[in-house]
Every structure is written in structure tokens, then in C-alpha cells.
Amino acid sequence: MKKIEKYSNYTADTQARMSEIEDSIVERYGNVPPKFNAALFLLADNLDLLAECRKSLADDGLFVEGHRNPLVVSVGNLTASIQASLKSLGCTPYAEGLLKTDEGEDTDEFINNLTK
Image (cartoon, rainbow, N blue to C red):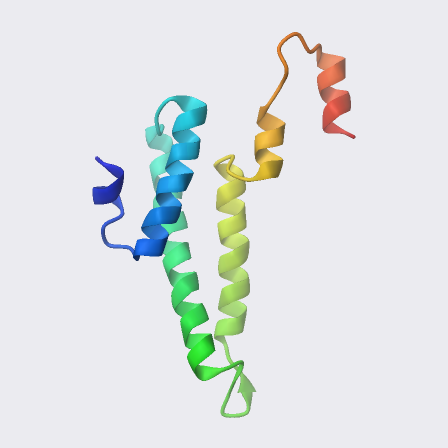
């Protein structure tokens, strides 16, 4: 399934972000392993929901009828979920650093580099 078709039900911004993420995965693995598909769709869902929550917060404000807008909590939860998804897919600078090793690097040197 082509990337564009795969994410056609999502916003243009989410489609662009998912394309970048898939490009990063393809660069690392040569393709997108099927086991990544569920995580990628959940990530796309969360990116779209986050955009909707942010739009609603911009329209309605942080407080609704004198109470904190419940979407504030949703934004926090969605952000944490997106960060966890990106980390599990190896798409954060931290995760990429863990995946990189220099050829010829011995085990002790690798462990020392991780704990710096």
C-alpha cells in the first residue's frame, strides 16, 4: 500500500509527518516492516487528535464556563503517547543514538558510550 493511500483519511499535516516518519524507517530498515503498521496508524490517529484538540483549545480557551478545559489533559496524554510511539519506532534523536554503533566498536566501548 502506498504511503499517500495509507494515510488519505488524515489531515495534510499528519500525512506529511507520517511520510517523514516512514522515510526515516525505510532509511533504517530498507522498508516498513509490517509489524510497524499498527503503531504507525495509532501515531497518525494521535497526531490528528492532537491537532483537533489544539484547535478547540485555541477556539474555546483554557477555561470553559469557569472550569479548566478538559482538553488540556487530553493534549498532555496525546503528547505523551506520541512521544512514546516515536521512541518505540526509533524516530527520536535519543532512539537513533541508541541504534547507531560504530563498526569495530567493542562491547565495553559501546556500553561506556551509552552511559555517558
